[in-house]
Length: 255
Image 1 (cartoon, rainbow, N blue to C red):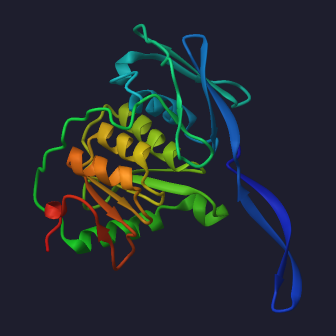
Image 2: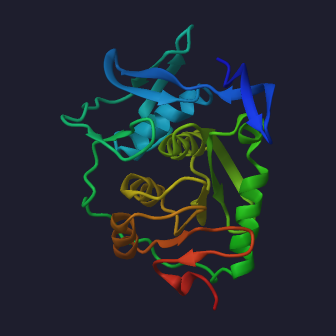
């Protein structure tokens, strides 16, 4: 399915009207069916759909590795993804509507206990964080074409390892998790960088993946700060090429 849609619109500037041809991001509903049973419906950008659904199941603690997946198929029209598991899984009894744009869902409670992520390796230099933000901006291929889309990426602290784009910021984390699982989880990302706001469900997904640092170009919520403090995650907000704010666990960043 196409990720962008051609359109024309009227632009008013400096007392004059212009007709502009452009591209806009596609938003479409895609359903998830697990073992023949409908589970959920996502509003998303229709790319990396297999990764989106597999990563969602991982972040929701339904699966642990790709060995739990027997088959993944995107239907012919691209509006449903069928997943068959190699072991029995249960659909959560309750889904919670999250604060994610386009209406994300989760079955994980915000106060669910998480193991604290240990501080491993050497502290990062501030310049490293600024470089990662710059690399994230450079990786935004779909954003450069259409605008109106979020980008998130895994990093080893020095460079971008994986990236994903979607109209929903929470979807980008699920897509990253799915791509990562498909590789066999060969590493734990030192940092996740995102253009999206950090709310509780975003922090949950970062903790599930095991990242020690979560960097956003915008703000964290009060609950995400509390969770990051409790779970040992360094939370960085309002990150740009030359500045950022550190809200929790600054010991991972050199003064």
